[in-house]
Length: 228
Ligand SMILES: *Cc1c(COP(=O)(O)O)cnc(C)c1O
Image (cartoon, rainbow, N blue to C red):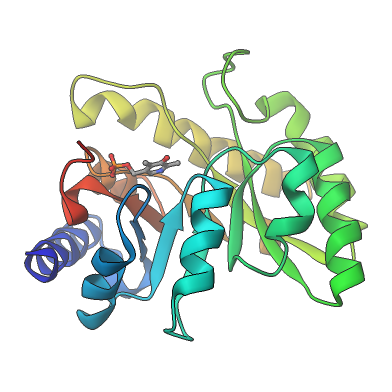
């Protein structure tokens, strides 16, 4: 079941990529396994999936602790409180929900102490809505600037969660907006390495996100079924 859905999602990714002349291998599929048991992760792993996304720190750390597959790359997608920063450093291939300078600096201190380099993405509040997690676009240059001075935290891109839309097309303007913001930041001197990854698109709209330039799509229910 999971293997079949994975095959279908991969083929839809390839079709979406080719529809805009992109190489399908330039898009990384993150299978969002939040709320799913480790057995489901193992089923996807057996079907060749290596990147998995989680949104709650505690649940993720438990899975990471119990997983015996050494080459799984876990990605943290959900909000991270600064007081849990230390627990997450080194456990995740990427932390995609970094949304404050305070959190950046806490992660830096923890990663320095561990002697590792932690890759992170900055979560952008692309709607400018103050109630949601994420950095308002106007504050992003300041965080990139801090990023250039960090030694153990490497900003490798940006992530966004657009507001719910009734159709996949409804998300397109937000995906396009993030892409345009990235172009603007790069033109303003933000190092391209900090804008390498564009993490956007979920089960309902990943094809549209790919057409708008996503390099990482985060797909849960289309692979693991509904979360009940
Ligand atoms: C749950 C979640 C996803 C996956 O959502 P689906 O609709 O199940 O594909 C992607 N990104 C984030 C940040 C999530 O929390």
